[in-house]
Image (cartoon, rainbow, N blue to C red; front, side):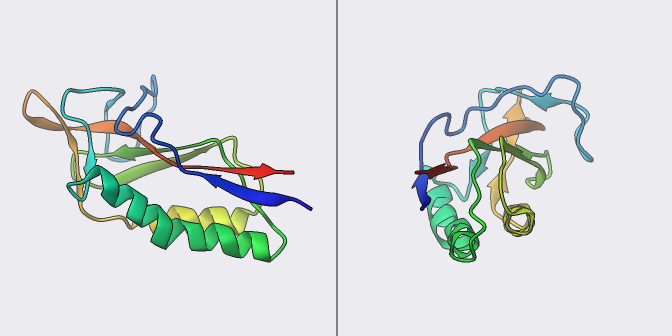
Length: 136
């Protein structure tokens, strides 16, 4: 029987990586790092509350229905308008419906403050401090 282990990590909290040549709907250029990185709800701990209340129930439901999911990284692009403009699940395996539900919750996140470069809002990658791994 497989057990779903959730690992909440702080790996790269607030640290992004560059998607060379990638363009999202509202971003001409996506930065990997700028001195003033994206911020969610004014506190590093706010992201953990969102994960616990909004994402964990979807993952738990998928497991309970016999369709567990896993991914190694969850990377967002926060655009200059303080919105999530791209969502990437790295190494995603499992229930596509759960993935759609997760994406919908994440896309609807409010209270982002976009990254700024030289005082100007820019698009930047943001690692969610969250991974979901199936363990035997």
